[in-house]
Length: 271
Ligand code: SF4
Image (cartoon, rainbow, N blue to C red; front, side):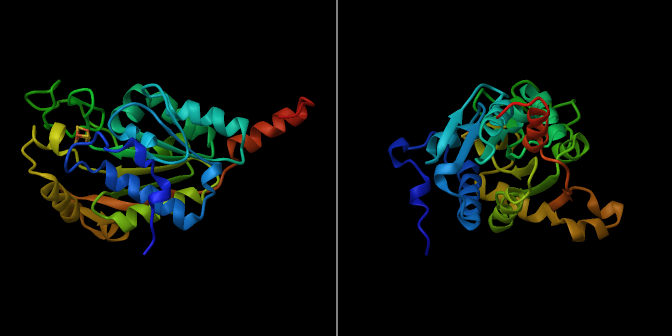
């Protein structure tokens, strides 16, 4: 039985998350991946933006940076450029990453910066009051969409791949071992790794949409998430209401700090 105590700052407890929130599950899956990968705690940096999930960096016993709304990826890029030896992990939410930080997300992926970005997708802005995010499903209610959202959500995994990320995966807070494996694999990719973690917000999202409490929301994940290999074989009509989880894309391309070092060398300078 492993103890993960060393990865958490006990003096920051109690945490601020609501009972039943999935953020703690995803945070644990991250440290499980760190443990399995045997990353040096002193050479691992956790960077987060703003929002409920982004509070995780404060609870984690690493060098951590809790930055500005939507700006975690540029801060993380700066850290990686300053010291490419560091393992840099980004924690971000759906509002943080795909709305305010949407452009940073696209350009981090296109540059293939060696970051492991974990998007906690709870389909809503939790901390700021339950506003609709770019990942709120059509018809679901939010404080800014009291009759149901009419804005089409996009798929952040498709966007990450199209923008140039070299590792793209999805899992859920229900599939903890699988989620941890997806993050573990992402940490092994030398480049921009993007992992979408579907997680439950029973308070700001679940309650407003009558989705039940946390166990019911987790049950929904267990019933609707399908492993990619099986999902790919489903006929179109059987995909209705389901979504795939697993690795969607994995490729190799020159990593940004490596490319940048070449520029520095050409210019005759030292990093
Ligand atoms: Fe979690 Fe939602 Fe509460 Fe935020 S508002 S802590 S996401 S349950």
